Amino acid sequence: MKNKKTNTTLLQIKDLKIEGFSDERWHKIIKGVNLELKRGEVLGLIGESGAGKSTLGLAAMGYTQPGCRITGGQINFDGVDLTKRTDSEKRKYWGNRMTYVAQSAAASFNPAHRLINQTTESTIRAGLKKQNEAFDEARALYDALKLRKHAISHVNLPSFEDHKEFIKKHPYRSWNFVLAATECIGNFYLQNDNSIGVHLLPGYDHMLPVLLKQILHDYDPLPEIKSKRSAGFVLHVPIGDHERRAQMNANGHMPLQITYTLEKGQV
Image 1 (tube, rainbow, N blue to C red):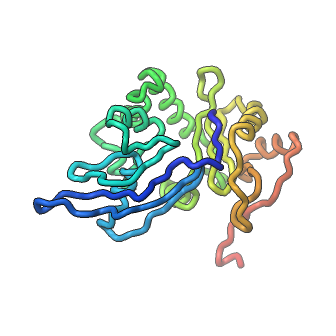
Image 2 (image 1 turned 180 degrees about the vertical axis):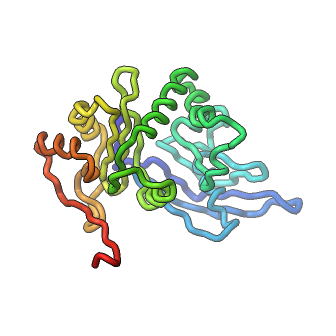
Image 3 (image 1 turned 30 degrees about the vertical axis):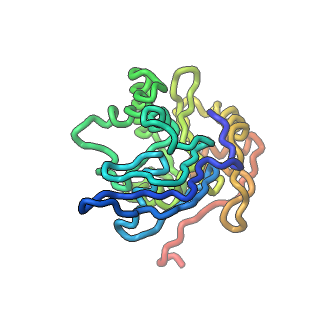
């Protein structure tokens, strides 16, 4: 796991201008946008259709769609101005340090191609892993998802619609595999409310203290926001996961609260 600091600027866009070509002439689309994102932050753009949201999102990667061009400004990603880089240089970042995920699942995955090829394409193209290694990790991810018995605030796994709603309301800050030597034994995620979720394959629960120690070493909690975000990290444990709860108690961790469901007929 790599160190994820939150006090440094990751993306800074200065006076960005973009034009689009139609009706035999160039039209201004982005007219001098400025923004800054630090590590761990999330920025939402709101605007009507055609306002330039997708154009700006792609431009943050130094990319423009055919018929568009950057005419001014800077796009500094981790200290590198992408407007001064060639496409071949920017490809070292695309799919490696940054990527674009379309809002539509149909636009994110192509049903005409195998899911495993699409899942691993960026990793292989960026040279991060060989094909067999990438395929092994992808299969391990699929197997881990199948074996999950618990989910946050659920004794049983939620439905697809429940999961989709959960993701919309709880965007991940980071999502990672857990590796023991070369074997994938689980995954963990961090959310923007400083909460942590951990899933380990059966037989590897004893690795939890080591994993938590490594997470605390590699990551800093985001700044506290009263009534919204705690000052430090908290670990989610489903109420039905008695083994995990006993393990946390045995290791001296203090439980903060228990969350109950509320139904109109029960009140």
